[in-house]
Image 1: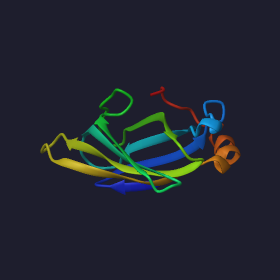
Image 2: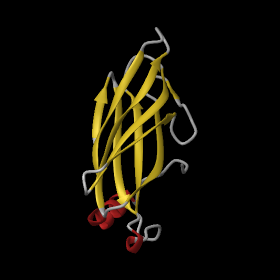
Image 3: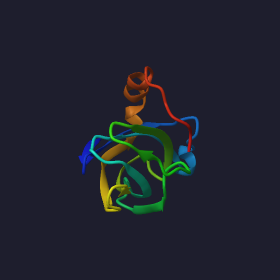
Image 4: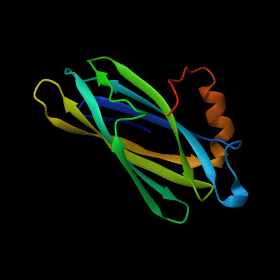
Length: 141
């Protein structure tokens, strides 16, 4: 997915982790990469995250927390922050979407920044891994 809200752009892609998964126990592990780019004219700080994960059975799991990967990055105009993390589903496919809450430094306005829906599927293994082979990743979650 690739969405821009209030001048903050969020890109996300996911990939299946077969070596971390145990399908016989209904445990499917998916990694995902996030890139956050501040295309706005003001400095913003990421405060919280909210994820809606929906598995193949339509079951919703909500994840809320402070920051991302233990950090609350501060992004000046033009700066980006990259990270990767993972999600575990009881089914071989599902979706993720959500939002970040940022605080603008100039007026302390709270900004809700959308994270567009992206898909967690086993079928995306080869395509995603091959297309990501030339990218550099940030630290783990």
